[in-house]
Image 1 (cartoon, rainbow, N blue to C red):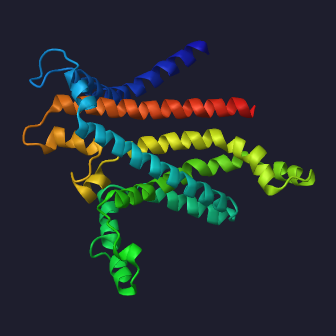
Image 2 (cartoon, helix red, strand yellow; image 1 turned 135 degrees about the horizontal axis):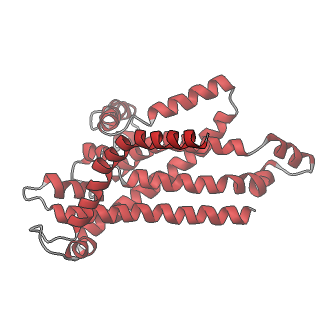
Image 3 (cartoon, rainbow, N blue to C red; image 1 turned 60 degrees about the vertical axis):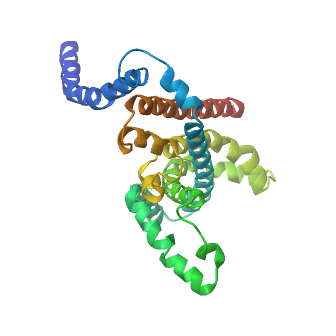
Length: 285
C-alpha cells in the first residue's frame, strides 16, 4: 500500500514538470533577467547601483511614483467603500439573484484595459454621449469633465476596482452569523453597536487584505492609463514602458530598475496591510 502511494506521488510530480518548466521559462527567468539587468550600466556591462540612484533621485520618476501611489490609494479606498456597501446589499438578496450579481461582478472584472478606456471615451470623452447631454442640459460638472486628466484616470481606476473588491469582500459577510445579530438585539444592542463591537472587527482583517490587493492591482495597471492619456500623465508604469519600447533610444537597464522599484512598492504595500490585518486579528481575539 505504501509503495503504491509512493508511485502515485512520483506520478503526480511528473505531471507537474511541464507546469514548473512553463513557470520557470515565462515567470522566473524573465524576473531574474530583469533584476540582473537593473544592476548593469547603460551599455549592459559591469555592476552598478546607478540605475536605482537615477530612478530614485530623478524628479520625473519620483513624481511618477507619487502619482501612481496617489491614484492607487484613492481608487482603492473608493472602490473598497463602494464594494462594502454593494456586497452587503447583495447578501440581502435571494440566493438566485445573489448568484447572478456575483456572476456579473466576475464578468466585469475582465472588462479592463483598452476596451474600458474606449467605453469611457464614448461616454465621457470630449464628444461623448454624457458630455453632450451635459452640455445640452447645462450640467457643468458633466459637460466640463476632462476624462484625460487625473480625475478621469481615477474614475476609470475606480470602475475596475469595484467588481474585484466585491468578489473579495462579499465572502467576508458570511463570517457574520445571523445568530450574533439576534443575540445582540435580545441584549438591547443597537444596530450601530453590533457593527461597532462585533461586525467591523470581524470584517476588518479581510477588508485590509482586500485593500492591499486593490493597491497592487492599481499600481501595476498600464493599458487603461496609456489608452486614455498616452504619456501625457506621469505614471510609473507608463515611464517603464517608455524606457523599454517607447523611446527612440531605449534604456532597458533603467526600465528594469524602475520595474524592480515598482515591484518593491507593491510588495511593501502587501506586507504592511498583511501586518495590519494580523494585528487586527490579534486584537479581535
